[in-house]
Image (cartoon, rainbow, N blue to C red; front, side, top):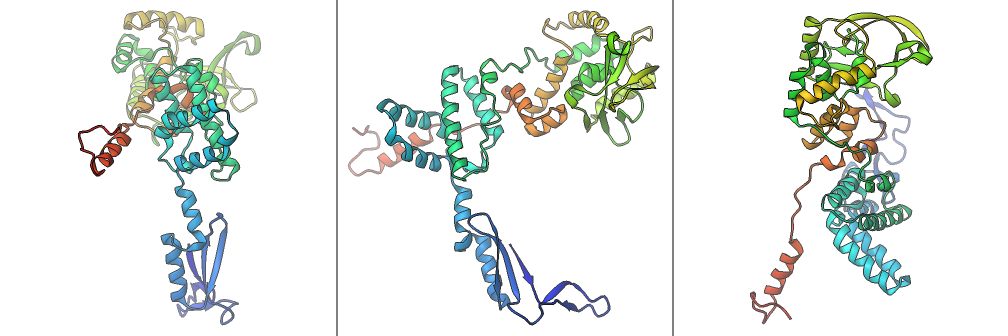
Length: 413
């Protein structure tokens, strides 16, 4: 809401510092209040007197003006309130079994999770966190599918009724989740296991481990790191993920630089510890320059590239050679066979998630194409919020104790 003086412009005369009259000066009502009505449309109301405009503006801001009251009520509408309306409007056509099952599933599985939340505030993260809790509680897959289907149906109805703009369930790929979270990592190292690996890896590759664990880079992106601000801008504390090293004798006759996977390039914050490791690597190991084809811009050019990570003989590292190196390091560090370089990326993501970072921030750090990928992969690491238990039972017990003729210690019959 805002109040505008229609008789004078907002700017003043530079010479006299007096308000400049508008074209409407002296004609019609002087004061305009702009507000959003109950339907969400922008409106305005005109007043002769400033005090009347101020009073109306105050009523709008406090939510008591009839023009906006319905909008405020709509914003406060809880999922529980809407679900009860939805239930009452549909159960007349259901079979006896459906009439029993739907209210029971709503009461036991949806209302405890979403009942008290304003329905417009429920988002994708809330839905994924709820599914995570169901899976953590070993809820049967058929039941998860049933509860989710009911929730999605109610939210679809809310969209049709224009209560919410869109359904947060739509991006969820439940089939993938019920297959055991197909994106979820098989194994994630802890802090000690990451440091143990860094200890056994030779000095010339140690910074690569830190780029994986401390920045979440993929192996190809690490091997494609070159000296200079194109990749690591120490001055501004930024890491530019713009390329990866690939090997294809059929297409480019060997090694070449390509864009990151699935267009997931971007600029992320450069961790201070990782930056220190990179500086130490440049001082102790240095770089090796190669003439490489570069297709990161969509066109093939050949340019000199000073890469950070090469073999002890100064050769480029392909997948086969890296696998041989990794096998020895993994065994020396006591990692399982499921432990790959990508496990360091999983460590990075799950550490952020477990320490309260918003999923959107984790998505940005990992450079995932969309939030759904991040949530499906790492939903089990979403922090579990403590939920009050036994609230309804306690309230009923207190109410029973107040009933005349019912001792507090006696079970009502």
